[in-house]
Every structure is written in structure tokens, then in C-alpha cells.
Length: 625
Image 1 (tube, helix red, strand yellow):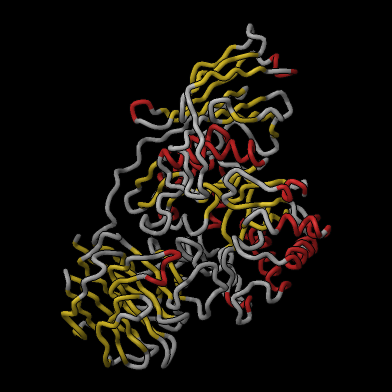
Image 2: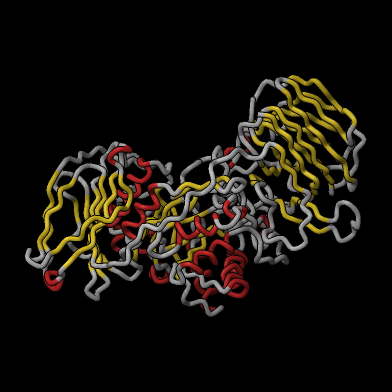
């Protein structure tokens, strides 16, 4: 029921016990959101909404199954719930697969091989079994590629890995399947994004499982919780979808990136340990704690007379769970698509349990009321309903914005931990020398790559001060999913920073053409990274420097000669104070008192002029708010 892509970046640096607590709220059965599904991005080195995730194969002969955090996240989810369903889906792909084109279907065998290595690596290095694999997120599918992928999976003994397609709209995939018997056979699930609880006739005619394979994407306030509660029921009631996957799992990325706060819960402060268990966690629990994959919906589902909906599910062994929601139009709008108007009002709803269910003596009752703080309840257990004398009939009084779960299961629980630490600003003095022998993660804490991939690196030939560095490791543009910048960049820190000094040792690896920068007040990231403004201090291997007001380098404040060449370490210092900026090279002023009026605040950043190797060391920032 949940998916992550470049959105769990900050979670991995959380100190214990808070990191484990967050994971328990998400994955531990009968505790919090108790998720049934974890869908992860197959990192492809490209920007995928809020950052880039590294590929397991940056180059054709390079394989590393320990980059990024998705393997770790899948293992943590499995540790808590061994039955969790795991799904992998690519957004971007490393550039070498495209052979010069921004297209993953140039060589179908090669791309299928690349995806299969990821599945095999999951098993070999992490003992993780992938259950479903996708095609290309929200982009074109290639019918022949899907068939090649199925054949290659089978050839590798991965018959159990099912294919989901196309992670976009219901069409044209459904029509293609009806016209092509082989395609129909190799696709197991049709997955559509943000279907607005509706499906199409062709999709139903395929007789395949229908999933809302990405949904929600809404700020995790009560409005987001209302959206989630409504679609979890109505995706089935209106559209026969038996699975709904929320983007995203946990808001563990800098808040000012696109879609800030759009996770089921919020954990964006590893430096303080602060996190918030938001309402969508408890809305999830209404369904996830009282059903399991393999349960099936009863035919008696539908809309309530005065607005809202109900579903009923059973395990086939006598257990029954009924979920009722009365989310109002005003408080349950998802970010997309537009929600047609409907009305919900106070009502009484009577349910009759028939057949074997008429013998049920008692139902547990769990209740959520969204809205005004004075009336708000989240996942509260009420007195159970005794049905012995009622002939299996009961009546509920329903107001707006309520959720009821009535169930034979007694295992439900509202898990809790002592409150986490109070929120705190990102430290105003921050430094990292990247001196880690065996890093737990391939990336340094709190650096959020926005184009390019920055990894810990060991310089075997540098016995001196720069043995351990952070290196930008891509030398070609990936097959992009979003509009990645032409320069690589990783951001860090507090978006409200205005007056600050950034200092960093830099090393250009590309003679003549190479270049690197440090920057402050960077005001955009994620899918908007190309248009990021800020104050950027560049040096180039051809012996020049530049100061620009944007990442793309169109706004030039200053340029000139600098005593710089490739394959040598230099220390850059950028000072921003009010409307003025100055820069030093190896401690000597190179330029000063350049007037900068916009932006007034933003992140610190490091990066390179193009997709090129370069190294960074002894990063330090000192800020005064």
C-alpha cells in the first residue's frame, strides 16, 4: 500500500531508536499503517521528483547492489512483516542503456537484462524476493520489451515474478492486451496512476487484476487523510481495484522540494530525531490491520444513501471486516484528479449479516473522526457490537468525515512510542570530511542529489589528506524521467539559510573542459532543478572562474582568470552576507562585494559543470539565520 522514490533520503540517517520507531509505524503488523505492499524505485541515476537514486549499474561492466537506501528499506520492511509484497519499478535508466538516445527501448534485451540483474541482485545480496516488476513509470511501454522481459525472467528461473503494466493510464495498455493474446498472457496486473476511483471497460474485459498502482500524493493533513480514506474504499467500489498504493511512504526529504509533506507520515529531521505520525497512518490501519493480501471483497459493497461508501472483505475462513467511510467533498480532495461534487450528510445505515456471517456473535469497532481538533479521533477502539440477539443486524449512526471498521479480528492495536525529540533547525555549523572506511550507505548524510550521483570514494593513490572524498560518479546523462539539469548538483541544509559561509575542497578530474562549483541560497530542487537560482561559485580546468545567479549559468555576475587546473585540490570559500557576496580560492580573495538580490535564502550545494567525475572534501557551512 505504499511506495517510495527518492523520498526516504533523510530516513536512513535518523539516530536510533527513532529510525526503528518510524519503520515500526509503517511496517509492523497490527501496530500502525501495517503496510501490505512496498513499491520501490529501481534507481536509474536520474531525477525522479525529489532527487536522484543511484543505479546498481552506472556503467555496462559495473555492478553494485549496495548503493542507495532501497535495499535497506526493503530489508527493514521484511524484517517487520515477512509477508510484505515487494514491487520494483524503474523511473530513469543509466545512460549506457540508451546508446546515445534518451530511450530505454533501443536494445530490448539489454534493458531487460539490466532489470533482471536488479531482481537477481536483490535475492543474491539481500535475500529479498521481488514479487512484481513494472515497465517504465508513467512513460511509454513497448509491447515487445514486455514480452522479452517475461522470457528473460523465465529463463532465469524467475517465473514467480509477475509483471505489472503500464503504471500510467488504463489505455492504451488495456486495448493492446485485448488485441494481442501473448501480451495479455504475460501481464499479470494492470496498474493505473491517479485513476480517480474509476476504471475503463477494456481494463475490465482483460479479466486481470486492476490496481491503482500510484495514488494519494496529497499533503498528509486531515485533508490528505480524508482523500486516502475515501479512495481506499472507492477505488474498489467504483473501479474494482483491489490494491491502492500511496505515493509516498514517508516524507523524508527536504520539505521545500516538490510535494513536501506528501508521505503517510513525516520524518524530515534526522539531525533532531523529530518525526510526526500523521493521520494517513491511522486511516491506513482501518484497512491494513483487518485484512491481508488473499482476502477477497464480497459482492455487497457500495455507496451509502447519503454519501460515503462501504466495503466488506473475508478471508474465506469465517472472518469478516467491514469498512465504512463518510468523507465529505470538502475534506477529501486528493491532489489529482479533480473530484466531482458530491454531498454527505448525517445518516443511519443498517447492515444485515447473511449466511454463515449471521452466526457472528461480536464485532470489534474501530473509529476515526477527522476535522475539528475538539472532535477529532484517530483509530480509536470503541465498545464491541454484540450481535447474538439481533439476528445479525446492526445500525450505525454516521456523521461526515468518519471511518468505521467492524471486524471479527481482535488483533488490532494503536501502537505508540514515547514522543520523539522536539523539532530543531538544521545545525547552523555543519561539516563533513567524508572519512569513513566502510560506509553503511553509499551517500553522505543529508546531501540530497538532484542531478548526478555523489558517492563516498576512496582515493587509493592519495595517501594524504584526501584519501576519503565525496565523488560525483556519472560521466554521461541518464535516460531521464524528468527534466534533469545539464550540471550535477547535490543540496544540503536549511532552506531558510541566508547569510552563510560555505567552504569546500574541490578536485576537477577532467582536463580542459571540467568544472565544479559550490553554491548558496539554492531555491529549487526536484523536478524543478533546471531552473534553480542561487549564488554559484564555479572554477574551471581551463583556468577561469565564474559567479552566476543560476545553476544553468545564464545570469553571470562575474568572470575572470583563476590559477586553476585539473587534478589538483583547491579550497573554495563562498560568503553571502545580506546583498553582498565574495569568494576565495585557497584562502585568497578572488572576487568580492558582488551584489546579489535574489534569492534571499535557500540550500547550500556542491556540483559539477557537466556529467563528469569530480571530488569534494572537507565540506563546511556556517550560517547565521
